[in-house]
Image (cartoon, rainbow, N blue to C red; front, side):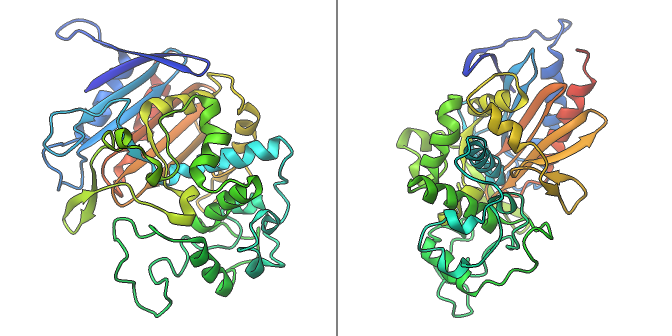
Length: 388
């Protein structure tokens, strides 16, 4: 395990290595807690063990702590531990960023959350949606009537067969706006807008495209920078895999994807035109900056957007609520905000509170690693139990 301790001052994380003594000396209770939770879940020398993962980083934030702890290795059998600079793909946690971007423009009065979303989309996507009444708020809260994925995701020539060029570890790569248009031409909603919660990458992807088209910016990465990451000082976050520079690519943890009873080497997946639903690659150091803003530990240009994004818009299918793509629940500790994400080669989970102020993010290099949620829940519960 490796710890990086930071002091958050507005948008800056100052990081230094923290060393603690063993064999009788007092240990840091937060570090000890995270160690106890994470140790059984990490096995860098056993990549095929689907109950464990090769490597992970944990970002923990409280008023007294801004820590990144690394576990395992950046590659199976390797000797380098991941740290705050190691990059991971966070899958559907990306939706939180898209929700914040949308909430920011709504809070500024540039967009109307209850307006028909089609009015903000480009001319290429408008014709098949003419007359559609789903709003931006319904897109971002999974209530616009769209399914999880478009029906032509892996059959783009519509011949009824999976296209041979589709990459199983990145099935949405190369999915274009023209492909999305062909899907929308034949789409019929399963339920009227606003009447049912159906988790949808299509819906969030369309919301992100509405932001691009409204702002006249081509590409989710630049929308993300302009509305979220730049103002939070997050210089290590990419909205599109193709935008990573050479130096950043070298810092990406080796991903591992499920393959029968084992795993195979993987890599960050691409989402094409639906990038806003799940393509972000980021570091734990950058995640600390986001968590500081969302918990209220720092005051930023996104304060109004965050307040709006965590306000419930509708009920989820599991009994909780959803704001601007942020899942909202209540437990014995009070209001709780969270979001998880899985790609074929990476898994992540973020969980934060504003009272008491605390947050945890777990990023792993194993795809569809369902334990990531349990790990974040256990750390969050342990933080609540620590004396303040």
